[in-house]
Structure formats: structure tokens, C-alpha cells
Picture 1: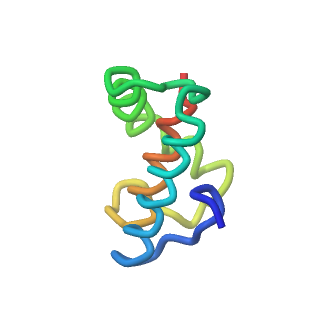
Picture 2: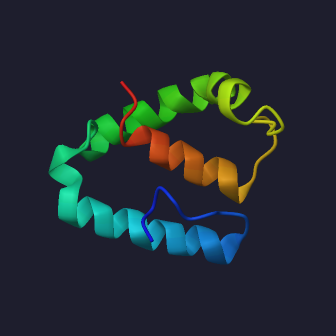
Length: 83
């Protein structure tokens, strides 16, 4: 299992997601679009503002205004590649 395929729906699965994300960064972080803390945090902030468009196109039943473990994991996933 990798960080992109894990289903996150509670604190335990979020913790597992973070472990997988960390392992991915150690292995392939240099290939991420946002491969340092400054770029990653900038992308995380931008993606937080734009994730409603992602959900409208992919998962219209998710409300990005309601905090959830899934939302947090989707934001972190998006920050690895968001431009």
C-alpha cells in the first residue's frame, strides 16, 4: 500500500497515511513538485483554497468546509504536486 491508495477516515488511518507519505518522501521526495518545506507549505496553502474544485469534479459528496481526516490527507497529497 502507498500513501495515494490508503483510505483515510479516522485518526489511525491518518497516522498510517502520514507514515506512508514520509516513506515516500524519503524514497522519492526529490522528484516531488514541491520538494522542500517552503514550496510544500506554499502549495498546501494554495491547494487548501482550491480543493473545492477538486471535490466538485471527483467527489461531489465531500464538503471541503467540514474538517475531516480525509480532507487533511487529501490536502497533504495535493501539496506534493500542486503548482
